[in-house]
Amino acid sequence: MIRRLGISVLIVAALAPVLSGDAAPPALIAPGVTVAGIPVGGMSNPQAQAALRPAFARPVRLVYGDSSWRLRPARFGARVTVAQGVANALHAHAGAAVALAPRIDESAVHRFVRALDARISYPAKDAELAGLQGLAPQFTPEQTGVQVLRQLTAQRITRALQSPQIRRTRVAAKTVQPERTVASFGPVIVIRRGANELRYYVGAKLVRTFGVATGQSVYPTPTGTFSIVDMQRNPWWRPPDSPWAKGLAPIPPGPGNPLGTRWMGLTAPGVGIHGTPDDASIGYSASHGCIRMHISDAEWLFEHVSVGTQVVITDA
Image 1 (cartoon, rainbow, N blue to C red):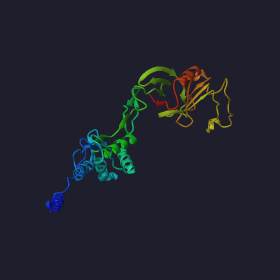
Image 2 (image 1 turned 180 degrees about the vertical axis):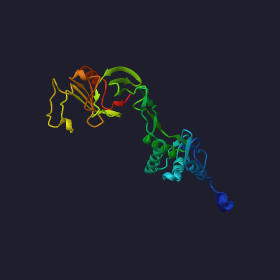
Image 3 (image 1 turned 45 degrees about the vertical axis):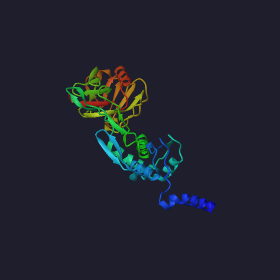
Image 4 (image 1 turned 60 degrees about the vertical axis):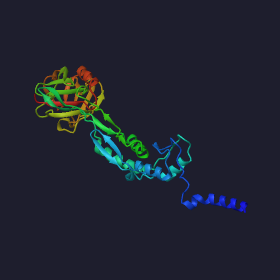
C-alpha cells in the first residue's frame, strides 16, 4: 500500500506543471548576441523578430549637398528572412555576431542612380573667346562641372539598404575640371585687315606683332571669328575654284611656291595664313583673300599655334 502511494505521489508531482497550467520557459538568445548589428541577447524568438523587422524597414536617407532623398527598402525589392536570422541567433554562443542581409534588386538601384545622375551631373564649361575689347581678346570664365560616380553611389545605397546600422549615406560625386581656363587659354590670333597687321596673343597678353598682306578689294579677306583647321609644312599650291586661277597648274613645294613653306588653313573656305615669296606685298591689300606673311614669320607662327587656335579678323 505504501509502495502504491509513493508511485501515485511521483505521478502527481510530474503532472503538477501541466495540471496547474504552467508552461516551460521560452528559449532565449544567449547574452551579447547581435543580428546584423542589432542587439538581441536575452530575447525570445518573438521579441527578437519584433526588434529586427522595423530596423530593416526604416528608410535610408541619401544626401547630396542640401538635397536628400528617403529610400524605402521596399522600393528596391528588399527581402529579408528575419525568422531564419533569429533561428540562427538562438543557436549562437554568447557574444556572437549573426549575419543577416536583405536581398536587394540591384537593377532597381542602378536605375535610381542613373536618374540621380541625370539630375545632379552637369559638364564642365571651358573658357571661351567672347570677342575683343579694343584689340585684346576677352573671355567668358570657365566653370567646373559635377559627375556622379554611379558605381560607388550604387554600392553605398546597396550597403545601406542591407545594414540596419546604416540609415544615412551620401551620393558619391567628383568635380570635373574644365579643359581650358582663362589662365591657360593659349594662343589667339587677331588680324587687323585695315592695318595689315597680325597680332599673336597668349590669352589676353600680346606677345608678337607681324606685318601681313590681306585681300584685295575684289577678293577681300573675310571678317569674323574663325579657327585653324589645317596645318601643312611645305604645302602644295593648288589653284582654287576661282576665275583668277583658271588655267593655272598646281605648284609643288619649293622656291616660288605661293604658300611659302607653311600653310594654316582657316574655317573660312579657301582662306589661310601662309608664307609668301613676294615680300614686297607685305603691308598691302594684295592677296586673293588669304593672309600672307614673311616666310620666316609664318614658320615661327606655325610652331606656336595648333589646330583649333582661334583667329579673329577685324576691320580695325
